[in-house]
Length: 442
Image 1: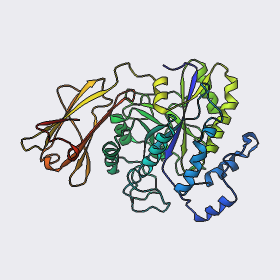
Image 2: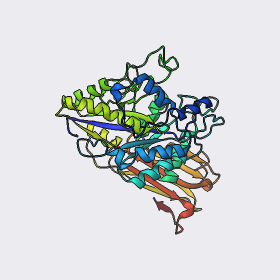
Image 3: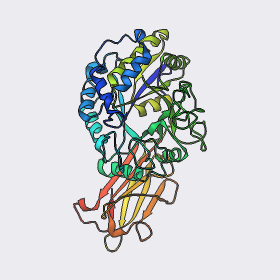
Image 4: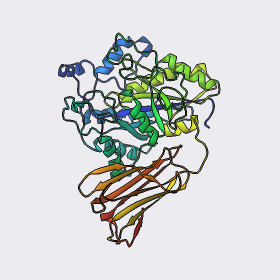
């Protein structure tokens, strides 16, 4: 467990790429309301409603604008503007999504597999300061409109292909989730329970005026009315993700910053420091978007810390990567890190017949690993494993009832354990340097 009197600040960025204004005339406001980055903002003296309005109007509608914003927000100067109690600079957690399969895109979102993910993966690698790279997904709207909010994973068939492509193309598998539109439902709840151990989506808050926010009130979206609001992490109930229960994954609270509702504020920050002061390490999730000015939001969060931290001299605060923070605040049961052993057995014609996966060390989070298959007919397919001789051993057979052996080009297997340790395995049959006799270990 981490230091009992520490607040772990996890800044979550829903990275969705450029977002144009709904009303093109709003673009003219940017000549009057230029970016506030780099200014010394006197937050107590500001009219916060007007300030939030100005901040929300400043959408970044191109990769050029986002790149310019990020060059300041992720700079060493901005990251170390106010070091944490451990003399560490700011840490970001980039929750990357793909916009795929839409037919209507009036707000000019970035379309295509890996378009957003690659941008941030390259940036994280180049900067090398410990930022997290995580999972974000927008369920498909009924009429495939990229600017609409939807809630159904069941009605989002490209979900499986997106994850499959992340495994096969980028050797990457999600460990932490941020719910699209801050909204979960039964189908997304059960999806996450199968593969993703950490979830920073609880937006429980009294800051939701039903008159001002009619579009999301009464559980329409962002429904976390029954979830804990005291900054504790929890295991959800099988039937309701908002209630505490015996499910596997861990959910943390994550409030927004300088938004129209569900905001982090001085009262909420004080609740977190009070909890840590009582000897309970506390995870504070804070949600932003990459199409707004992150430097301004960083300054506001640090302003709140500067107001609250002096009241609790025994409490430390730490800028944190999401998985690290979960493991320090809500430690997993101690066991060896997950290692899978994967073999592909060939049939008498030298074609794929069966994938056998054995858990060599540790335990798989959820009931099974994730299986992705790239076919020669240019599809990426997800399917279920069969159990082997134990609940930690698995197999999959290629035949006329699943995927034909002569249509298999590449295979990916990925899993997490409860602590977020990963075992990811891929094999592309066309890239084998030697012709296998009867099996391939990958």
